[in-house]
Image 1 (cartoon, one colour):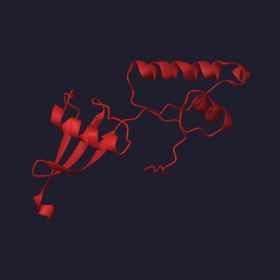
Image 2: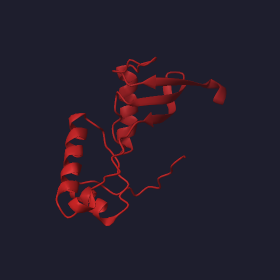
Image 3: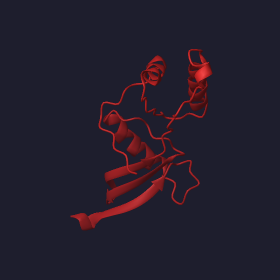
Length: 132
């Protein structure tokens, strides 16, 4: 059973890493992700550990870099102006320009929550775990 499984690390097909995925491998993983409602993976910032039985994908786990765009600081003398909104808008513009597949913010106060909501972000409904 498990002895028939092989494991291999692959990088995105455009990667200069040690083992770029073939387009067919990447498409197969993309299809599995899409079928589950998961976001597409960034081809430059992803490494995947693929488990195969023969040529078939038996499973995989993904290491992906997702931008984390906080903290956001505004000096007390600037609070109540649109400085926080301007900073947030320029960050979103940058992330879109570099084709980030998504990003996350820990909105630990009501103002940060509103900034996120105003920019169309969705609150995560799944448990999130962190290793320290």
